[in-house]
Image (tube, rainbow, N blue to C red; front, side, top):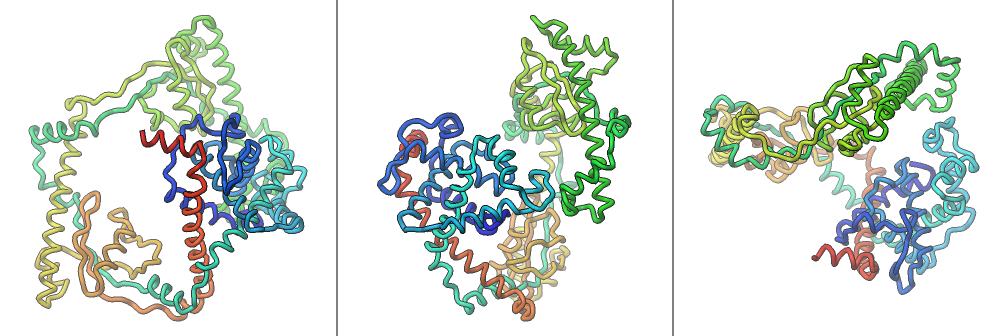
Length: 556
């Protein structure tokens, strides 16, 4: 969080998104992004009876870019166009409402908030500074100007963000009126722990009972054929310039390495590497990063020379096999990937985000891409083949299908056993017998869980067999002295028995209560504001032409 705005606004960001996603079901195509994204034109609609001009929209989009950067340390370039537009209009609505209510933010308050942002260590580290803040001129030069933003945009953002904070506090005031008595009841409900036992029924315990016959596997494959469809894939040939081949020479190329390490340590601060417990350990990490960065740079230079040779071999009519021809001349190995999809990327190495996109852009007429720098090396790639979506034959994937069939049937057996046990144990308890007796009678072994409450964040003994939320839902719905029904999971399921409810630790409650009361009041304030915003946005933004067009498209 950065300065005053970051201390108070991040939850507002969540409130706005939550309210919009619940109340407004509007969708946009990427081509509809406006403002700084590619030219805002047309009718921008009306909010509170006042037209929205192109300048209104563009200015608010610029403010939203700053809002996003100061909360996430990156620009909203990857934000879907529909989401960006939605948030810009919501921000316009909030500012118009603040104006109507006469919310005033003085220049001194704006200056103080802006100073808090610029003096924050987080912003300084984002700019690789000393951790003691960023001068205003550096902020303008290094952050704002490259985005086409100005100091006036920053001032407007700060003023409007403070106005929105006041608006939230005002409109959510009723929700903040939570008495200590009510908060005490909420605390007790959330922190009263249950003592419980659980019985898991897992597919792994029933695999041996499944008869995997050819006919059964074939029928399963026929029924589940769509699940085995492969997406569009590509296969590429590539030459790799691995970073490890350049690490040995890199330190000698870095003059004054010790000074660079110290300088970067001073800029980043002692807390930049959370796993480095001492300054020596932090400096060792910096040294390693500097050496690796230099080695990747050397790898890129060599890859670039190689790529130029490939591209220049037949510049007028390049052929995929040119990569192998140049590699043979230079005695460099050429490798071929296994087919991969746009989502998965190659399995042979850790590829950067843009690797799959570049690979899927290759064609026989435009067969080359690179150099592409990844975390472990630099790659020059060439088209090999395209494999369209298909469903493999059973013969090609029989072992996988057989394994899936066995697991599917074992899961069904586990769930059948679990449901039978749930019925049995319920009847046993009704006759006055214990849970232990029911388990012995059914031949199952219960596990004792650590005490847990609604506020418990983790329960390690669950492992990956079920989620903590699923356990809470089952246990708290069952009640003390009762068993849950059988709760299904991906590989079977479980039955939980609630033995007792443990009293709240009074000392812990007294220690945590002031902070808990403040959190409850803040949450209620957020809820009240969300309710207002959802209703208000539905009324005001429903007349925005872009929203009407999107709603009509969705209806069609």
